[in-house]
Length: 85
Image (tube, rainbow, N blue to C red; front, side, top):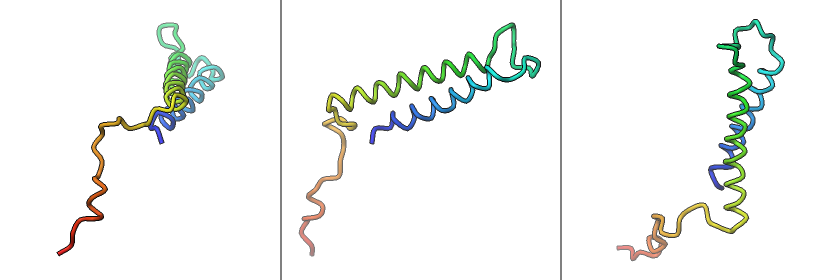
């Protein structure tokens, strides 16, 4: 499984929660700093990052690319057939 899928889901979930809280929380809670709604802005940023990461993972899977590079280090299959003393 490509690691980008669960990370994208995590960012989408946390960004959605933060955006929802930024929209519905009362303004006097202290979330407004310099006239900016910090929770709302960062919730949208996290959601956007999760969407970009998820789309990258989906596109690589749709193109049929493996999640590991072709020249990655793998355990040689000859270990199982090694001669035993």
